Image 1: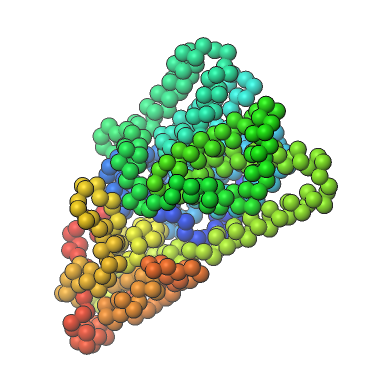
Image 2 (image 1 turned 30 degrees about the horizontal axis):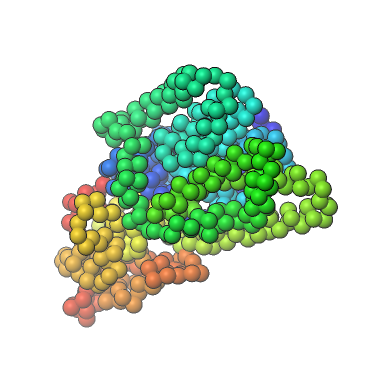
Length: 519
């Protein structure tokens, strides 16, 4: 098993740990590393999903164990706390890559398409539940019994379901096919295999979740209740029903969408010849259809169908290569590699990197800084909520504050979350939420995007810019091109500045007895 192909994938995924240095989505940190830091070290922030019991502790508990081990040997630095979880996920992704290669009958095109996939390179080493979900899907697909009665594939499927319930959607057509073609009676297959494996895996996952939540919790049910029945996901954005077809799937596949479309057409036209591809294509279409019915849509939700799409494409290209000229084969391969390489390079090294680059600076500041009153650092993030990691990247129990954006769970009329309230009137929010005295209660550091400088100039007049980090070439109304860190002046400078801006200067954060500041 441990052949050169496996180690090749290990090298690719480990390389992505160091080459992908940009921000993707908040869940990469706030639903994994932040939770793990809270479990291991007793301080950190848990989002509202954890209070609602809709998230499984299984994934973050793994990282918490790693954190505990690092602490035992005295190596729990902020650098290792952020690096080692990604290496751990990268190794799991590499094993999943190898299982994908085995499933594809070790074809060269399968190895090439997976290794050159810009999207999988971009997310394959991220600590996202979607990354774990996709890895488990690849492992399960490699065991799927196209020509046997094996049911080993059900174990990773069941585990993936309890980590993220929507991961079962691509498996609905595949499991129906498996049940239909089986020589065993349906009732026997359902009771002795599907139900038994589901109950055993569920008992483990529910036990872990209930232990950490402190009460019996069925996180899978809570996840579906909030995201599907209550439609809470739409609070974080909505897209038209066709978005996955027009933008989602083409972006995830990159330039490989072209041979995938050709492969899909051929699979439908000759579905009796390419039966395996046709069933996988049905699974992809079914998943896209179900997700299209939900208002909230994200690229990462399509990650579990990526290996299916790549399998279909690789099989098509392998057959096409038998008739194509060597020049055409090389041209196709170079086109895929160059386009995906450019996409992976830009998204992994350039786009949205400032909110991660700022964290080592804040970690050093939180460790070493003392103000003129000998107080430790107090950091205020005035940016869209969850724009940066939190305690997992700072690893110092200092006061930190960010703008919250919980959904309207209590059905309040004309509801605006804290972040929306802030952006509606930045200085009004500052005056209301940061009491005027004493000076020592002021945040020592303010982290914000450059686009807010004109609106916060009065407040920032008692601060000086310390450092600026490039973030993106495509700033928006709320997300600027640079992330800036401001530090409060010393006593004399601060008092001089406040005397000239007495009508607008706004010292002091909220009462630090608030658990928001001392989780």
